[in-house]
Length: 365
Image (tube, rainbow, N blue to C red; front, side, top):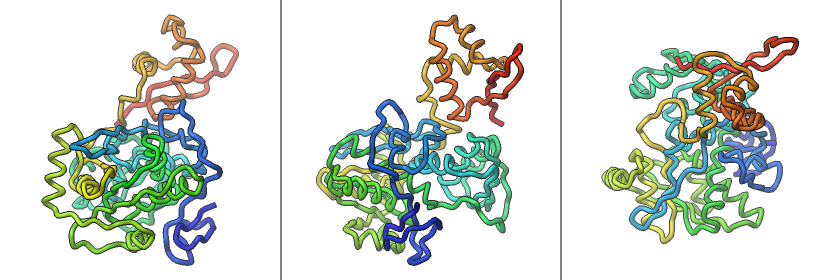
């Protein structure tokens, strides 16, 4: 069931029919963290979606920069917090094909996850609206077709309820990292990300796990506020105006410490400096990385990928080729993880008198 955070409406529409606000899935139960799971799916008990695809999103690092704690979401697979939402949304999506409009960060993220799941993706875009890096990365993804011009109705939109459900895991993760928090600073555009993070903290408060921290919404000085931002302010969020020069200076200071934030994201760092013990959320970087963050690949997964470069193999054949050093169960677990990351797939083929899964390495085009 989906719920409107503003008026409380419950239903199945993606936008509240009573007040026009984004809806978000109600948690099916109290948060129970699966600490054996190294991605955002460790919070699946409260997502309303069973464990689905993962490219290694979540569990992003915390780093102190000049006395301010920074949560670095640029370390997600496509370089932004969007990957949290995309992992859950792509897992919940039921279609075999999806039409998307181009939105910076969001489209690259959701297209990457849908493509890894084997969904055919049509991206409709104005070539002037995307950077060269965005265009090239989208064009290189398997299953993605780029169409210039508008007119198509998108099947998936920024702000989808299940996208919000994934983004709210940032709040769960900060709670797991730090316990009670004094304040959290988030950059503000349309307010969708801030709304999802607010909802995550609101749920933690309702479960009696922590008090709602002060939410600091970093906005360009003089910018108009969205309806979502105005509502969040009415719920206690603090609007912090940031000069463009301050955002750029903050991006430079963060870069010197190895955190590469685009100026919009760096505004959160400026806002966090205005409040004692605030955590700044760097939501993304402008430096694009293709496909996924390979730091999540374990040694066994890397060995299996190397074996599958030259031929298709069954799990037993892989186990045998590895000298039977890992357990066969370990090989199956590694294969499941590689499939979830979109790196391999399998076909059912006759092997002797039995039908077996024959695995192959996916190629990027």
